[in-house]
Length: 294
Length: 325
Image 1 (cartoon, rainbow over the protein chains, first blue to last red):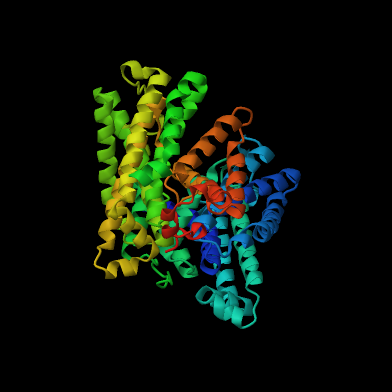
Image 2 (image 1 turned 90 degrees about the horizontal axis):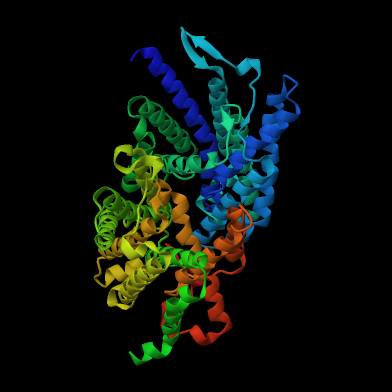
């Protein structure tokens, strides 16, 4: 067990964590503001990956193909998110938790089959452009250069979200809505528009994450199923509605996974759920969340 | 008792109908009927937590899966007689529910849902990874029901009697002072605590009883399907009783059973000509959630007041509000 292996493994964990962060940040934002737990978040993430593949497939003869496909896929997902919010989610704002959960769960099933209908059952592979293909060396330790791209996208989104929530007027409104919808709406701010905006932003990030995930390996049906529960774990560990918490939670889950693969491969996922359960039991609001109105 | 016979005479008819069913339909539909009974038992046990206690468990399949594995392992590895296996399934699932439920009942609402989901996935991955004991994702094959039960018709009768017995037992729990206490906790846990009831202990007992019956349902599944796989534990399987309960209606005792009939029939019918069953059931659930809160039973109650009983009114017609924390 030498140091370079540990460093490489921690980088791989960080990259996995950043991918989880990209999914979980939208999940946490949507839950924090709208109080809706979006089961379909990872399904939309997968749709983003498939869209990225389709755009890349159209432009595969050009070197810039993948770089253009990723933002395009994210934008398409934002549009899909807008339609879903306006047509479906808006109808269940006032409903109880189980019905909201079931609606988004129904979306998981529907999206899964729609993906199968649209893209078929074969795995899709995106050939990476030379810039992010192959390893780069730091002090002789090899890193997958695409991991570095994933990690930087993750940090970029984290900083962007932080800036949006803390420094802009709309961010302030969104944060206010986390604490009291009634108060925000009493100030004359249209809550449904805020909700739509937050949902579209969350799905945009999920689409971006899916598009970024697409070139990591092959894109397969059902990839969303395992990741969505892990994203829930991240949100629980970090605390609902806390951006910093989601970031820390993602890195914890990513690193726990990466290192247990090294030392105790069978236990990797078991360990994540144990951590989540312990956090839920001793500190249900998570590491960085505040005890919520229940 | 007189009121009971007057109000529930139709149950006798349903039971007689269930008895003659294998005589009038082919083997395929007998299989469907067995599935309806097993999944219906699973869904009714889930509704002890959802309808009675007002908490959404998204990990109920864990107890179903533990029950299935208890029976499966005992039959394949030790050739234990089926009735003892089923009892063992209930005990194993009950023990799991006791340990995990101890933590779950400390939380409510969304936290309860996520903790049950996390525990469910935990058990799923344990079963999945513990290859030497459970054979991991290869599953367990060759769970052959003993003797005459090998034929679908006899296994159907066996299942029918066990499920009927379990339903009667759950019905008694439901109508006992314990059941009313559960509904009091659902309506207002604080007030129930103030009149001197140990809310957590009651919730835990309820959770364990629900887990035991889920385990029984799981135990029945293995010999019916001849094999089991870790998928029986994962969160998709946990979604099934939720769907059934929401389709049928969570407030009536038989709502989940009606949901199971609709769900399983639909599945048998739809999978006959398309592989896109998830799409179909997804659309059905979306329709029910958006336009039919209260489920089919709720709709029936609204349209014809025949089924409406005084009992249901005292429970409160809050079909849209069940599960609030």
